[in-house]
Image (cartoon, rainbow, N blue to C red; front, side, top):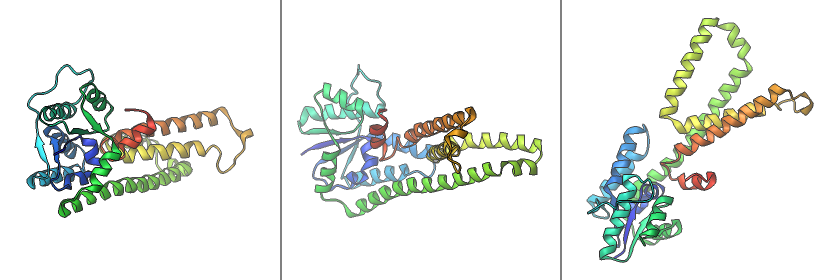
Length: 277
């Protein structure tokens, strides 16, 4: 019997791994489940609670096991989370009784330490092959597919809403003089304070939407220099500053986008694109 130790990233990327009928041993470290449950409390309207419930349902059907290692590996050369340490420790425990053990993880630190400990780590192609070639519990597979669709819908919905918000921003910018003339100075000051406080509150709870909004607004801020009158001769120092400011906002938005995708199935692609592990 083969043994696979799952990390959080691959559970999120391919939740159908939790629906495999018991041909091999699938192990979810207890710390990984705790991490998913904590994420469900931190992020409202997220898919983490559904993933945590899927893990519990799979464990009840004895398709997977939720385990803690007998002893944690110490003196590791990387700064790892408890989940990472439990993954490596469980793999080491099982390797003592069974040589056919593999860690399912894309995390660079885990893969590096696993290599030092002579522990096997499978890549995404092997992971996909494992899912495709295995029989599955239909009820759990249906739940897993729903979670995957929800993640796509979440991304698409945030893109559409942020595009709409960008249109509103540009409408307000184009009619700024009318807005300022309509309300008095003190109302304008209070509105600025309110907007700044609200945006800060909003960013902490809906980072993906905020990141996409930054990207779109930064892009339109730079493009407005050339649209609708595209003429290099009319560029001024202020124009160049506006272009640079817009690009900076886009970069900040991309940085926040990477953070917001960290706990989604799109994280591995983003790490490849950004080069940030």
